[in-house]
Image: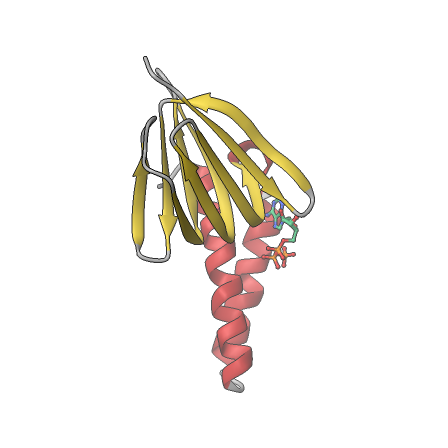
Length: 134
Ligand code: ATP
């Protein structure tokens, strides 16, 4: 089967480096599936899961913003943060979600509200990726 190399890199260092048969990511305009031989593209990433499909398995990585750079033989993902499902600290994400929900309830100014909404989205994404609930 044809494969494509995938590299996921964050400011803290590399997170993933492997050959896969398909990559599915959440871009600003929706889900994007990438197969080997894809035309060169750059797309901005939202907060969401990257699905890395291999023969009989799918690995999940939670990413938070960044860019997906596609070349026919290689996908590079530069993300603000990225965690493999197995590296996610579930209690930390649950606590972050609880804090963000409390801030949303407090309903202060618009800036706080936006920040809390984004924090909640990051936390829920981590919880979903940890649980394989994508
Ligand atoms: P928190 O409030 O728990 O710090 P956050 O969404 O504000 O969450 P980020 O700013 O997105 O955190 O990430 C900061 C760093 O912490 C990144 O390196 C990210 O990979 C890591 N990180 C954040 N939450 C988790 C988690 N639940 N499990 C593992 N790593 C995490």
